[in-house]
Image (cartoon, rainbow, N blue to C red; front, side, top):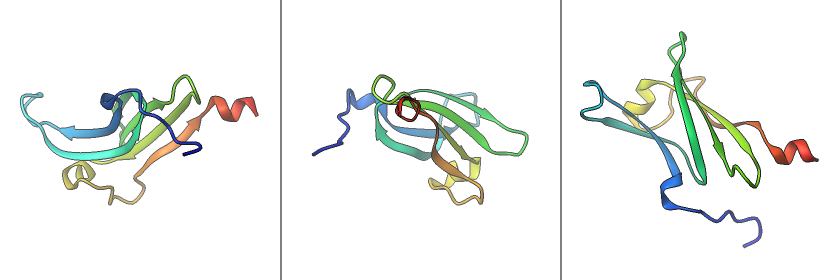
Length: 100
């Protein structure tokens, strides 16, 4: 299929956030906020506004995409983004956009 992205590995897809109440001994909730492949290097921080921000890249060598997702702990607990203002896969930067 034209334009189809081939996954390099099964481990680099389905970017999912979990919560822990015991310093990482156990985990609960599950919010998959990008289910595409070739995702890497997520960096997560919680803002003063209560949102969790995750910046990460996709298709590093082909497109050089940098993306941003924003969600809350409640979204993780519920397994879906229901919080007003939550979003996923916002394209911040791309080699493809710069080269055109």
